[in-house]
Length: 397
Image: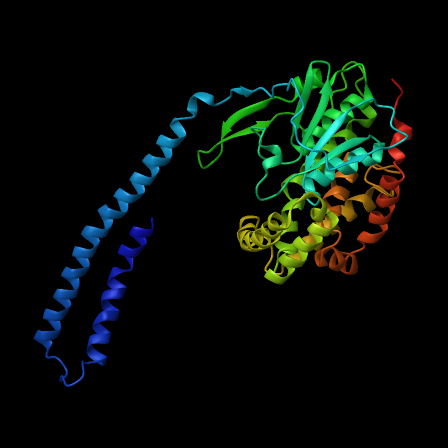
């Protein structure tokens, strides 16, 4: 299409060239005669045709070659389309030192969990908030966000990874939303086993719009009720909870990075806060911490520019953050409760709170408190999570 547009503008360009020749003769040269002008125009016209005749096929060849290369690369994995990737149970726990243990006396679940995480990763914060709200004890392994050697045992190279001890070993659970859905399903009916529940969340291979192979976890916003299907009167609430959980992952979380890494100075302040709250001085040597802060801050500052464009944020990225927060608060006000779940938080409340918790020490969060009505809901959520109020709703085994 771009080539056709260029061809359509060719007469205009030729007319412009003619005027330039008429108005601006070369230094020490008199104005050209009519025959000289005609000869000059023929030369320009011939040169343009030569350029088109060379450029057009070259452009076609490059485009065709690139498309062929992409198709060839994609064809190598076409046989995997629709195939399930099984997450195998580990016979032994990876020999990685535990950074710290979170123990809650109210825990009655008998779950033995280890969370591999970055302390300020929004998806890791979502999982921690869920566990803290329900008072579920767990171990933490802090992962170096640059080298990631602590998860070298896993084919899944993202965090969080939650390792759950089961009868036959240790079951890795990947993806924050799947982890939360699976654990919430277990808490509603503890006769279900973790390694049985994971069968309801298969990881299926598929190609994205660019032909790259990726694995998508099915049903990750669904709770598995088994024989205890909720009454129809609350089905609308279940659907809405699911909708807002998806909004957190698909929209809201993408406003964070362009805001906390908005400038290089903000990026460095953010990573220094990460180091402080994540206790990097305790868990990583000085040289490794130096790399994490300096390489991480610079890289994320650069990446945030691409993310701003990719997710169509406003020129003032703060405004995009405020807009999404207001969208959430307006939806809560429409229901008339303290939380999206009414008088107690539901899974969407926990997800939004967890994501915001990840930037609590950043200037973007302080600005959000100053420019929206976030504080009332956020402070109420803090109280619910820190007092583990979800534990009183859990059924005993």
